[in-house]
Length: 133
Image (cartoon, rainbow, N blue to C red):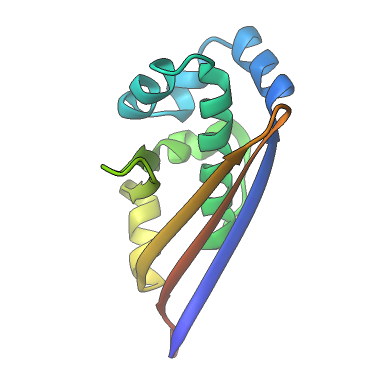
């Protein structure tokens, strides 16, 4: 039987921009080099960072785990949000997050990110086999 896991998150771009300015280590703690290269190539990088942060949070929610201190020891970097060849965002998992998704038998990951003037929102849907334990 198929199991569906869903998570959604919204980020206020202005507040996110303030966090970036006040805490210079925030970006490298949360985002991979590839994500930083993508976001930094955009006119207003903070909008794209906010969208990717929302996608990472939505991914964590879809996996059924919570957040606690310091990006859960850099676990947010284990959820990488990169553009496909068509430009559509895709999730790539590594480390502990990837092991958790394998344990849940996740076979498909989808993410959608949207921006407005003040907010970035992301939705993540994961599908896999239902555990029968």
